[in-house]
Length: 299
View 1 (cartoon, rainbow, N blue to C red):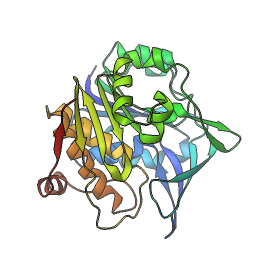
View 2: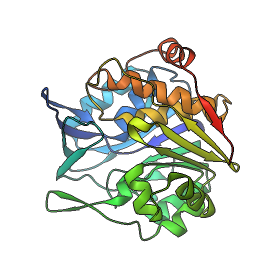
View 3: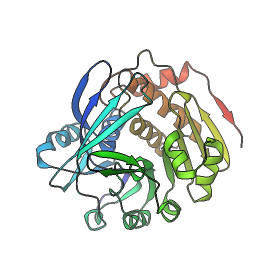
View 4: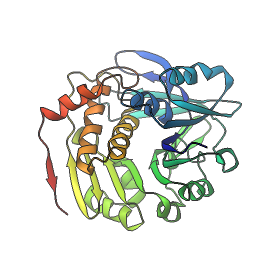
């Protein structure tokens, strides 16, 4: 049985994206943006595991057509998100109109990878048992957003993650935005918050700070990553997933934390300039990094 370098696990969603300029209906979710983003960089030894209704299988076939192996777990429904953005792309309101089946240990028995990236969208997507199980098979990378979002009716409410102290012992790489970071750590200073998350066991802490760039904390060092200026801001949906695709791609190639962060940030800049998933090239990303400067900050 093949052991993948990287396996992304997460729901492909139906997304209604409303911006000041237009309204678009399209597939979405961590796994969708991650898979499409990384397919522009590399498809060798990468897997996606998702769960969605049969009516949304075209989204899976489109990803397979890009050369990525996709395993589909059964689900009666797909996750259906409505995302509404104002003039500031850092601000978003959400509703959830349908939910898919959660991921389970039984459903992931055959999963084999060096790194598992868990793209949680809602609080019950991945149980603590799933995290513990997969951590024995590879390193866990996680976007924490879903653990901090609970659906009541159709509305999405911010919650704390009650099992975070036990779960984060098993997480190697954690990504959170500034709002999620404050909920997780009860700390508004990203430097202090990063140290708190590291103290819980996370080896690579990635804090995305919107237009203020991102902050990486690993092995006792901070790396301040810039947000490269976009020529036009069209659609911010999926930027965090695009960041993780770039970061994990570069780390898998042996890049440093800072190199991986800058590459990931440049991918986000290109993603912002178009609706839909990242569609640029490695050369496009490297050009943005090359023409901009960045700084490394010691702890």
